[in-house]
Length: 307
Length: 254
Ligand SMILES: Nc1ncnc2c1ncn2[C@@H]1O[C@H](COP(=O)(O)OP(=O)(O)OP(=O)(O)O)[C@@H](O)[C@H]1O
Ligand SMILES: [Mg+2]
Image 1 (cartoon, rainbow over the protein chains, first blue to last red):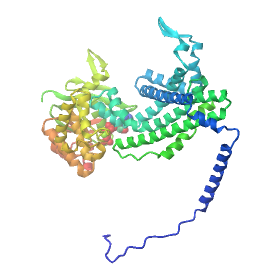
Image 2 (image 1 turned 90 degrees about the vertical axis):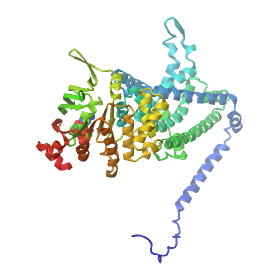
Image 3 (image 1 turned 60 degrees about the horizontal axis):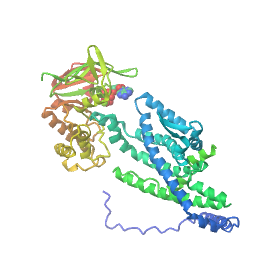
């Protein structure tokens, strides 16, 4: 019996003098001084025309470029996810032809830099001047605009990465689920759609959120074919008005705003998902951790480096 | 009891180089409760899974209600059935797993409704009515809106039985339905199974519950190392086993 005897008095709460964290204070002071000095030198730098940054931040062409960047991100992600699911299902299929096709696709699109793929689709007209089926054909360059080439390249590339994420999600679902569905008489297609994929979502959603942020940054590569995205527009003004650095600041500002918004949305989405599964899954990383993870150099950097 | 519900003739099955079933001959009559006993690794689950084609057999013949499972025989040639045809055969065979395998993203009610709606194309209202009836029957009418994670093991297994019954099967397969349960929850699942047996359902039950086998089974089969060692009335097999292997096994589990 552990019931407290009545005469037992509650001890006085602990009031200890905390360990002094001198190091913490010193390091904070150093950091503040360094950051202050950096901000000061940049802010007062005569070579940066700050009014230009302010003027162009909300310039209509820059904003239109931003919208194009968002469109490219959303469209290539949506199409990439759809194609990725198809590739993942093909890869796990019993049909050896489908499996091989899926593997070959991944090998091809993950083995070449996305920058090269973008330029390649843009220059398709060089080897196929006209595209079409039978008697119906059209000039390749009018058929595939810079935006079209960018979307094509980003989508096809993304599908290869999404396929692996989706495959991981599908494999994370217990085999017993498929067996139970089959035992009830569900076909493989129904089993995948109704039973396996919904459960795979929990594993698929978090990395897909990261893919969206990575994609947002990757879209800047399409500036090499002048696809009129945010970076294209910023560079255009920069070289025209000899304000290269100012325009890079403008572009960076908007990229940061967009990644921060996306990261916030991602955290909320994951929280919703953890709740919906009723398993009381622990919450994913918080917003700050997410943001930190998203701002790390991702695939974009490595692919960019392979130029 | 004229036609056999399940007929196995010289069924063989190997995984790689390991032969797990070494010629099984069995006949399960319509309405019969058939209990499979045997030590771990003797091939009980494998045999059960062959009956609804979750595993394919390598040799022999296996039929349910007079229909060959997984194949069509024309003359002396066997043709593999298409996926949709296999799925159609499975509709009439219910299966209950050791680990329940309920769909965790669906409520108890949705679990039971899934196959009638998706496979038999019943209307949602009809399926819902019947699902509620079935949940009532296994004593879980109140829990229809709960997700599997919110149910005890015994409750989950009862939902799993209701889910299988929703397809109005002519044969039910149980693979150690109570082995994953805490001892105090075993009874509630066995009670549901006893009810089912009383109503005349044909059942093949792999179990270590010797008491259940003795009380409910019409036939008890002892399997070891991929063969049927002996088969007969529960009183004979459990009460008076003839083979040394059966005796050794029973002395361990009783
Ligand atoms: N998919 C598989 N691949 C390879 N070997 C398998 C597979 N499934 C089962 N086996 C092997 O087949 C043998 C029989 O397995 P089975 O599950 O049928 O035994 P069991 O009688 O049900 O045993 P338990 O009482 O432990 O469930 C075992 O040796 C097992 O390791
Ligand atoms: Mg088993």
